[in-house]
Length: 121
Picture 1 (cartoon, helix red, strand yellow):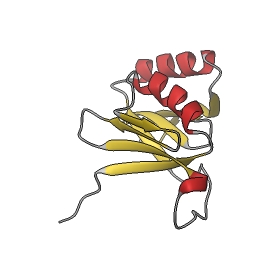
Picture 2 (cartoon, one colour; picture 1 turned 120 degrees about the vertical axis):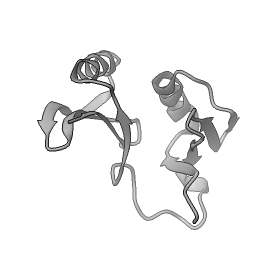
Picture 3 (cartoon, helix red, strand yellow; picture 1 turned 60 degrees about the horizontal axis):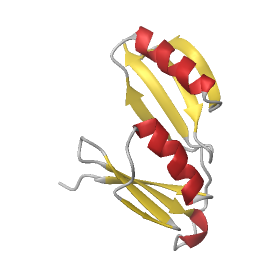
Picture 4 (cartoon, helix red, strand yellow; picture 1 turned 180 degrees about the vertical axis):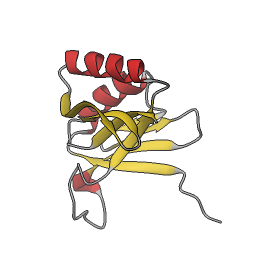
């Protein structure tokens, strides 16, 4: 069976997005050029940032149509991450809230891609 190994986000400015994701992930990209960057996750999944103007065929959508989810161990960690990310001036689309699946908040990267942090119920 085929399984996805790489998530690629289309971004406006690779250098700007690299600054954001290097801070978020606390690691440098393993590959970087003016129009592309790649981060290696401990899980083996790769996260790519690709300049949208360079993608072929041209993408139809913009950021915000999906989410990258980050699982936190508990509600206190969700609150701590929300406070830290808010303090950095990162966009917050949803403040911490209880939902059916657990306690969560949603942030936005510079291109409007959603980053959901959640402690599962």
